[in-house]
Length: 225
DNA sequence: AACCTCGACAACCGCTTTTGC
DNA sequence: AGCAAAAGCGGTTGTCGAGGT
Image 1 (cartoon, rainbow, N blue to C red):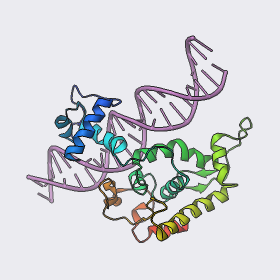
Image 2 (cartoon, rainbow, N blue to C red; image 1 turned 120 degrees about the vertical axis):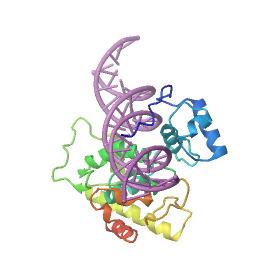
Image 3 (cartoon, protein in one colour; image 1 turned 90 degrees about the vertical axis):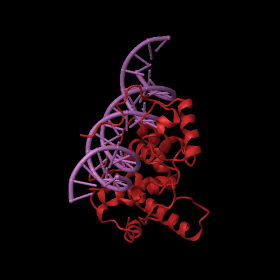
Image 4 (cartoon, rainbow, N blue to C red; image 1 turned 180 degrees about the horizontal axis):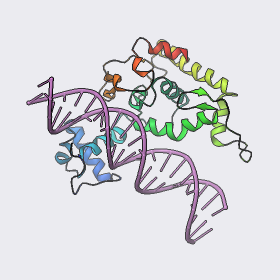
C-alpha cells in the first residue's frame, strides 16, 4: 500500500495564511513549478506538496481569472459538460483563467440548480418528463430571474446555449480579439504551461460517450447540441 | 441578540494515471 | 515488464458569511 503523502506530523492544514501564500509565490516565481514533493521544504512551508500544488493552481497562479462567470462562459460550461461529463480539468482547459476546481464548484452550486429549475437533468442534459413544481411563495427566485433574462422557455434555453456557443465559435474564427474563450475543442498537446495536462490523457474516463471523443468529432458534436 | 439554515468556495482525500528507474 | 514515486483528477468535506426566524 502506498503511504499517504500528507501524513507528516507538523504539516499545516486548512486555510492558507498570507505568509504561506507569499512564500509559495516567491518560491515559484524564482524557481518555477517543479517537484511539488520537495517544494514545501525548499520553500520553507509546513504543507504537503499536494496542498501547495492545489493552492498554486487554484488560487495563486497569476493568470487566474476570478469573479463571476460571464454568460458565454456559463453556456460553454454547460455545453462542454454535456459533451465531456464531469471532466472538470478538460472543461476548465477551454476557459482561460478558470480552474477545474472553480468550474466544478460553479457547476455544483449554480449551473446544476439552474438546469434542474429549467427541467433539464444535469446529468444527461435531457429534458425531464416532469418539470419541477413551481414554488408559489417565490414568484421569481434569483435563479429564475437570472435564467429568465435570457430565455423564455426551456426550448429557448437549448437554442440560446447553442446559439451562444455557435456565435462564439464564429467570433473565434473571425476575430481573435473579441473573446479569449478557447472554443477550439481539439484534444491535443497543451499549448500553454498553465493548461491542465489532463488533455493528454482523455482515455481514462469511463463517462459515457467521452471515450469516443476525438479531436475531429468534438466541433461537430458541439454544433449538434 | 442569538440561533439556525443555506449557499459558496477553499481545501482535503482517495484513487488513477503517468513517469522514471 | 514491473514496481514505486510523483502528479493529476474528481468527489467530498469543512468553514465562513449572509439571510431568515
